[in-house]
Length: 114
Image (tube, rainbow, N blue to C red):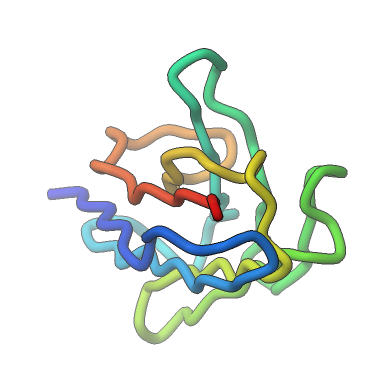
């Protein structure tokens, strides 16, 4: 049974940091590219960053230089370190493969506000 469980979100002031965690099970984690996506109520779900099975990374222009994606192929977990957060980063964050192929998890809410 496939499970994607996101955690680590919260309310933070502009300029703050959060670290998101996505624990996975039931997938061939080490063999696939994993990604973080985010969605606001008024926008589609957008790709934030991805990391290939060998550790190569990609970032959306809006987060490059502030966010860092990483993975642990032993723990089957993918992380997103978010620094210098901005109000426009407010969204629900999800992990999935790239391209997505698994049922979406519940996501984790990130709110950036003073």
